[in-house]
Length: 421
Ligand code: RFL
Ligand code: PHB
Image (tube, rainbow, N blue to C red; front, top):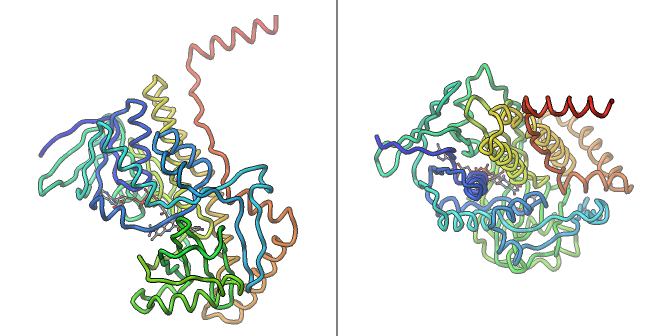
């Protein structure tokens, strides 16, 4: 068995792992990334497209934002269409100037991978982590295979950035972790095409045939989604069938000017809400999708991963700058406050905008009417639209607080006494 040593072992080279690795490296904190699949496979996954300002700022801090700054498209708002009637949610005006940026997860990942190659830090691809040893105190160990050979990494901490199906979360004993889950009865069929987007901003479409989303990756590349039952198979959807169905669900003006073309990618993503509490145990910290999943309706998945990264980066940087170990104890609570808020917003958007088919037709019809009425209520007054806009741009990141040092508190007491005198 080959043995390596580092400060932080990072499992997974998705956006969470790569961003954390890059930020830590910039602070001189050595880390090793171990990824189960190949670089090509990671880059072949088409996922999120909308970045909150917090994510953009973090990417700038990591030194990997050049292409994002050049090519990212700033969006000042988005549309919600209800049976073809569009309402514009002017997020910039409703939130005192906040905006979101359209730049694909694939491109973020590509930029971070390039920066990793240019750094001195080690990465292993096509190298599945098989298990971890996470003692109450002392060094942790990560075990993985690389080119048929067993390896171990001895480290101070493990960042579990290995997504929903990784090994990190299940390694936390079941008596310590609680999982909250809601699986929706539908998924999103996504299609990527080199055609000009039908609109310069996003359109979320509520429709009696099911939800649809018109998104984009650039001025020449579109990304569209259709709500489909979660039993649906992608093989049943020719490109022609997809475009036909999309036209039915888009507002008429956009349907008429929709440019179709061959798909570059087509896949179905199931919709799920999921949270694991707590997000840390001994030397292990869960980051991103390994700890939580949101349905993509609020564009929050990738953005939540970034706020976890920000919290862990801050805590680890403070620890390696001399703060006591307890500084890391805040991680889970700080992350979970933001996560639950985004979970609620994504769940709410999903309930408002999708068509629910079910066995209990009678009650379903009532629930659908309630959702219609609630959405109309929000869209017909500025306070309602402001609430949607504020959540869409994302809450500010919570700061990790320094741990009061014994000397610092004595000094503070003396100061207090002096003020009293
Ligand atoms: P990722 O991107 O899943 O990366 C985890 C990485 O860990 C690796 N891994 C392992 N490596 C070593 N050893 C093991 N034993 C390992 N087990 C797993 C995996 O191979 C993988 O490379 O998680 P991360 O970094 O936390 O990033 C989170 C985001 O990817 C995610 O939140 C979003 O993409 C969610 N999401 C979407 N979010 C949006 O905001 N908008 C979207 O449109 C959107 N579409 C999606 C999505 C997630 C999807 N998944 C996970 C099914 C569409 C899909 C299909
Ligand atoms: C995307 O462009 O992939 C996208 C955008 C907004 C969402 C979900 C997905 O809410």
